[in-house]
Structure formats: structure tokens, C-alpha cells
Figure 1 (cartoon, rainbow, N blue to C red):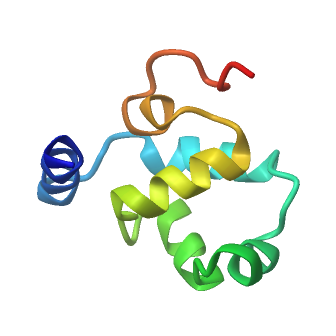
Figure 2: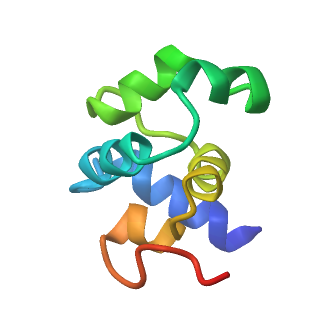
Length: 88
């Protein structure tokens, strides 16, 4: 838990370079629309738009939920490194 808090503080202190682009790319290939994500997971669809346009930074929890929905790793979304897709 402490590690997640440190990552979240670091993300809020500065914009994570490339996060919005990687998130947008992953959401485009996601099987659910932003409205469906809102209905099923409670993540406001207008916030998703703000995340992908680099207006807002998602919380670590939200980022982990979006990563799981899209089948990508959080490391890929945050850092742009590592395996893009989770191993099943």
C-alpha cells in the first residue's frame, strides 16, 4: 500500500510523460466504451476523457482498474516500459 501511495504522489507532482497517449491508445482497443466502463466500474466517462487529454491524472486505483479492463499492465501505462499486455 505504501508503494502505491508513493507512486500516486509522484504522479501528482508532475505529469507522467506519455500516460495520456498510452491510455488513449489502450482504451481505443478496449472492448468497452467509456459509458460502459462508467456503468460497470463507476469511473466517470467525462473523467476518462480528461485522463486521455492530459487534463487530469487518474488515481492509482483508477489506473489499475482501467489497465485491467484493457488487459495491459500498469507499468506500461505509467512508465511506457515492460510488457504492454498482461500475461494470461
